[in-house]
Image 1 (cartoon, rainbow, N blue to C red):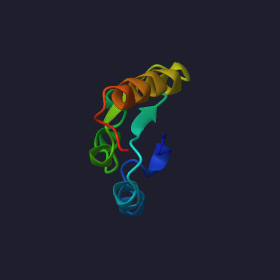
Image 2: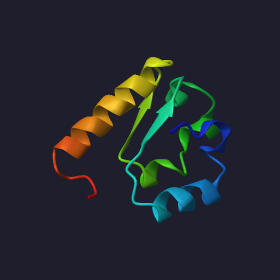
Image 3: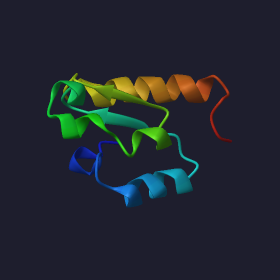
Image 4: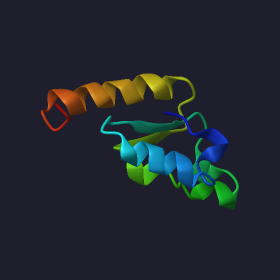
Length: 78
């Protein structure tokens, strides 16, 4: 999931992610660590399995690969 500008501002989005049992990966098209200082903090990352950033649209594909492997490993829900 890509929280975009809500990454560093939305406690509500983080709370919603924590409330569900669906694993997710935070995706950012750009490398937020290389951008403005205020973008370096993610309120939503702690509710996700991990983060992928800086790979453009390919980041969504990479996130799906990671989620599939996570679920196949037996660590996922269900």
